[in-house]
Length: 148
Image (cartoon, rainbow, N blue to C red):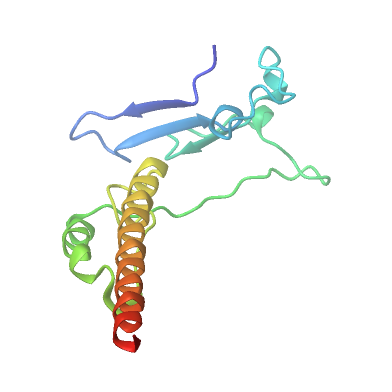
């Protein structure tokens, strides 16, 4: 069986990044049953965040000219400034009709953090839509009675 995520968290005080996580794109994107042959490693694609050692050359995907297809992405920096901003964010949510979600708004920016924040905003917007519908309904009833 192939896991979607494999994570190594370093002990406090160890040098380097706090963690390394490698995820199986096939599992992560829910494609393991869609034409992917999990018994054949050539069909598996992985992403590693904060690698502790270089990926062996033989495992790198290459373009048509033989150059490695490697991209380094910056990630959200989870520091005390970010945590403070996250605590203050609820005071800003909804002002001028704006709601904020994404990797920097909740937790450390993992997919499940983004999903949780998005679900919370969807719930708020759903309640606002229900309240607006109730106000419209009361307005229609009030206008109907005053016209009669």
